[in-house]
Length: 354
Image (cartoon, rainbow, N blue to C red):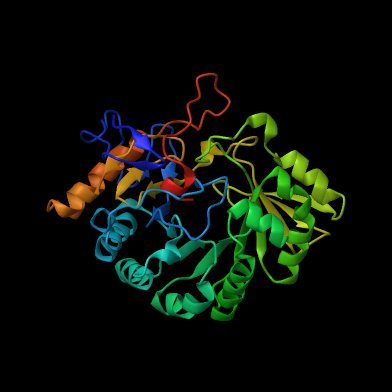
């Protein structure tokens, strides 16, 4: 296996196709534990306009050479294979920050053409979204998730290492104007912003956003994550419960990562993605592509299977689909954070894609 530095692989992984011994003869993306992947996450860059401490080092991740990134045509082709041949029902584009790709509109357009009617979503920090939201909608984008951890400008600047809160809020407003909804806001739980959470929830309800808090995972570039220091779901519920009446309603779908609570009797809700303390690996339905075109079936699994080489080597769609199926079959049971032999992934969140 090749070493990985700062979240980006220096040498592509995978010396061949993973074994498919024992795999049932079904067309979809099934693994050894009976899970079937329907949700595709595609990272399209490692570049980002922020430097969030739970995601990236202060200097950012190494730049991936342009010719090593999947092109808009290649992404569109893989989306078509995923939807037509592998049973994928929803696609989300991530980064880094996907808005840093100048050809993002073309990526969305090619994907929409390859998989008509398939929901196409974008996870973004929102910076610059107000200027591109309508073009993205017209190209086929259906909704966005915006990362926003706090409304306190000083806390935001400290957490992201950039004073860009007004630009994020402008991006959210632009997404609303373009009709990219339901608009979800994702907030990573950190000790320095925990007590900003009630104000963020009140703001989200007022502005028609669905807020979801996320437990910090050991995917930070600085390797500062410690289980004993993280904010967990129970601690957050205590802080929110001091201001709001929260009624648990569970998950809208067994594979959905967020548990939901009604806020003050509803209809507004708040979600918590408790990946660490309330893992949902047993119902995971995701498959991932890195920006360089490798299948990565789990955030915490370092095994990657190269599809870019197949694309550029003249492989047909059927061959690519078979390799993708084999990669999914090898998916591990869960992230294993609580295991004594747990090893952090070599890539960071910014290098994997959210």
